[in-house]
Length: 451
Image (cartoon, rainbow, N blue to C red; front, top):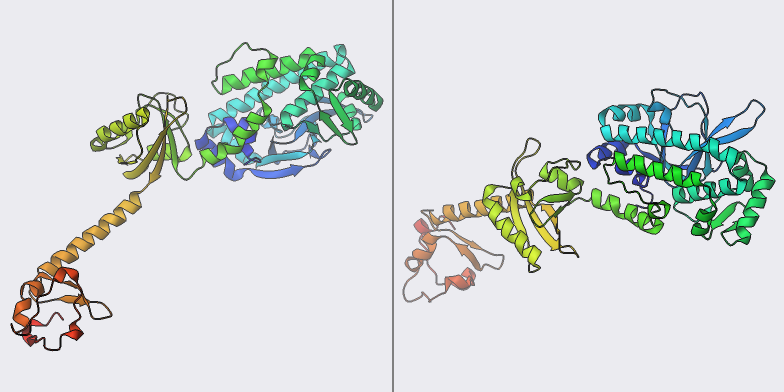
């Protein structure tokens, strides 16, 4: 779960009904530091969605010099040129910090851009975010010190990796920032003396994020705030005028949310949350399929409208019991047939959330189970009816010869099968008659056909 593709922010924001289709084409790939994902001018075969790695778009000069134009991590993707209609990148994409990404074939990605409006919108938002990052880098190079730019680089990678340790060399950072290696070593030395970082061979540990935030240039807050604004608009989330401190989400909480998100989304049972009025406020993929609704649907919908009219009043009583905190049982209802599925019988277990505002339902499909039980009961009733109406006598005995069942004809006419002198009074309900132990029992041949 920790290595889920939905750690990537673009994939995490894609509605589940579309993501369930995308995930079949997403393959995890481990990327090493310094690995070239794609060369400038070459046709792209895959689109990459980083989850625990970072990559840079790098421009090279004729004499071999290089400079980093923008960085991408779990907030973005490698292959944005496809969103703009080009099949190749104008710049080289190089892995900076090793980790994992998920790749998708180019043809699948291009098809999904036309099928999933949300994916297209999210990809375009990331293109705009990259443009903002590139434009700001021009200002940063001309007006800010190496130390400030280094803090920017460290903070960006920390956010992208969800880790305080960056496995990267001084030389790599120097190549990305377009400065001498000695300048990076000197700047890191000052940050280490201030207790903000700990630099070792091939790694940098971030010890004080707040301290780095105080030392970074304003470019970092501008770029991150713009990225947040764009994604909030794409995800239809409320946008606040919060500053940088409010923007930074707790990294541990974010990792835990992603850890359990897929377990909720793709559970084999339906999870549905109702408000106090019985309106559906949230559902996982299985729950949406059971109710035959789109998870991205924004208009409120009453849960009882999805079930047969005969079950609605009973469920409403059940819902009120849950809200009162007194409910300790389950409820079984029948969901009405839709254009995409037949009638479905579900068992519903429910509990109240900690705040007391939402009723959390767990729905289990028991259609086959109920049908099987009904068929067995119908079969048993048919057998009993046939036995009861047989004109001849029937009895059934176990391996020890004891009577275990008999039809009505045998029970009613038992006294005619033996003489009064040899007949013993027997309680047939006890079903403990051993026919082998009745040597004097006389049965006429005309009345024993069923035996």
